[in-house]
Image (cartoon, rainbow, N blue to C red; front, side, top):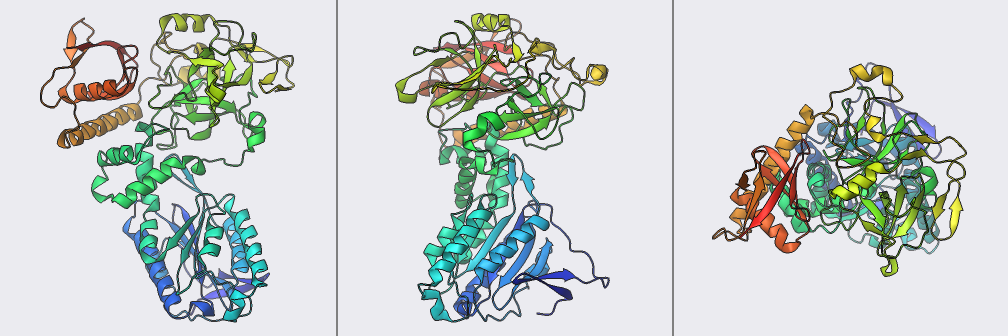
Length: 618
């Protein structure tokens, strides 16, 4: 293949750099980076190379067919030489013909190719965001997995070659800590076990077989975009493929979404933590590295927030509320937020219009979750921790939920600790109803210690205690001040418009930024989505009361009049009620979206937080 490039030796591989002879700069893609590593060794002659080319073309053609998710593609070949034959770009037409004149020969130096890829990823690749999913560069290896060092095919079966494979696996593990490795097996007798060990040493690694699976994988970024659209309306736990299918059917992309796409979308949602911006926290040091209050002038852990007036991150928040789970130590005036989708990101916080997030008065509403970050808790039936919570009647804020049925709570006295919530059948704390007026009264009366003193501890209820901070200062102030005064009080005149304070929800809730265009647009969009779901359910006979309206639901208007729900919403409420008499469900009335909370027999307007009584008739 003829290329107008300069060679430069670097270790045992060769880097090709554009010559300074007036050649145009490569056209870079703005979406996910994909680095292909193509095996052009002698073992790939014949069927292996033909299948590799088919798989490669299927992937590139797939990217070209889905222009809404742009890709930045680079290509390495490893065979007689380990070389980069294409810089990152989205010039798919050119990329499709890269292998036209390639001849397979020589050894299969996969180890050198992986070492080369580390250099390329560090110097040239970039991360991308698809909604709430932070996508790091991916490596796609197309090979038969028959590693050789001298070009002799018999060498691939030599026991000594096992050591080379072990070295390769170690390098793959190093790369895979941050980046996904996808292996596509081709050839007459590919080493499936070895390729699988390489792929699965990485986060979200995959082993694909041939052209068809490669073509499906080309839709992965497109499917991630669909997952980003529906993640905000699904539960974070206990959801099924059928739930994903229903949500996708109600979306604008249903007609172009296949059943295989549905499975991919379900997998993306199930492995959502793989696509967090920061995945490097050590599990053993999370309490010290992430869940820490470092700045007394920032809202404390447990504070509920929404996107602010200067929000620049598209639908990273999935249009839902979130909870502050820590103060970010990498940049001043920054907080770490876990959105109600379980996705975590750092954001700048201040009291002027430059704030990326603002304090809000929205309680965490559970769908199928037993408990979640942002919930309120108090002492439970198995409490044995003295006055660690500040005394009987105190209310705390859940900021971390673990799979072992334990949770972490921040109390208003500033103390944080872990508690059993189902672990060994014990419940140190119990879930609070955020709409209980007596509970809210107690919550408002609690003094809020925003910065604990050195005398206080982060108590580990396995018997360990650790100091949280060396700062002896304490800071107490009502949270409702936060969106109108504080670090940037001088800027309060330029702050965003706010709704009137609603003191009935949460002591973390101050002046909520008034409904913005984004909120209205999201409400209309979600409302449209809900109506589409209803239409599908009617077509499929999903309504429980399709023949008659024996059980009806009504809501109380501002004038005191009881108004029946639309037939589709009535059926939806009844269906949810039959499943769980204390459950919740989303309904749409006109262009507004409401959360029906059956345990309190109320509905909450998602846009303005107004509440209305509801009743069950019949």
